[in-house]
Length: 452
Image (tube, rainbow, N blue to C red):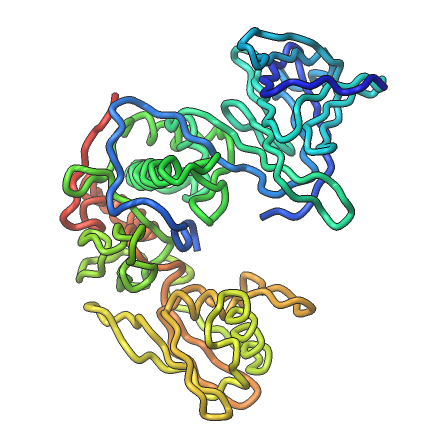
């Protein structure tokens, strides 16, 4: 084995049919879109040309396998990995290493090691970028993902001492969107549903991208429900058609990009962003009029989550609420055994916005509707994870504590703010155009093409 060579920031260019990279791994960090992270103002500026977006596809990882999608079925994973970087003085550097190659974080540095023992490394703490050859597509753990990958070392390690890193994929926004739209909707749904979803996903992504850039983050969006689910490259034709036919179109309010929240099923009544998430400094966008509940028509009766019922063990449900409070700094961390769960406030369309939970000691704890939903599903060490059949699907619910069992009846799936995906499908089936669908769910917003 040769000693790693020190390089400040590297770009790896794959010069072979397939690159296979192994790395050590650790802990990875209804429907999409959970509570927004801090930072930013109410509105997002409008890009005038298609921007790139950085998607964190792995967080706090110590193991990842990176390959190049074969040009044809049955192609072999062999070849040479070409390395490109720029020296501190700005001069280009080049090298090559046989693949497959193992990638690890050693002493804070990204190190590539070939089966022969040949190694390549660069300066500690520096990110390493992997780029496919022209026309090629990289794969991460078997999923094809457009663009380039950056391996970014983190200043931490696992208990076993393994180095931890993030994998961030950078691509154009329009190449990113099909991988979101295909994961969010059923393939059989009408094109207009996909077009409406593409506009919402594009608006949300550009809004979060602007916030990330202001906050100085190294990535713009997560690939999970923390932002919106991204499944990588897709062959689903309707997803590509929807993105292409709506290229550059976003929802705007007062001339700037709107944060277009969406969820699976409203259950017939909307939630308000202002009741669901923070509204203080850095979160002013949650107060904007198009994101608040208002009376409107729905068409989500076909959803299996339109109405639902769950039965939970009262003691275990109490434990989940307690753990949620402990991990999120909420007073419900002190709850005993749940005695009563009752809505105490409602929005303009009758959807509960807050609940009071009383325990067996007579103590009362107030939770927002979305907080209650999360708390009911919160993981607890040593307790089996919630299954899909057990999950409390929304914060629009009623609960009856019947001794050892709590019966929860609810409506909808997700936070209920903005677009209802099942209703979008229902309206599209009735012949609504995508423009009519999106403006129906964001009253007061405008639909504009901001780049071509």
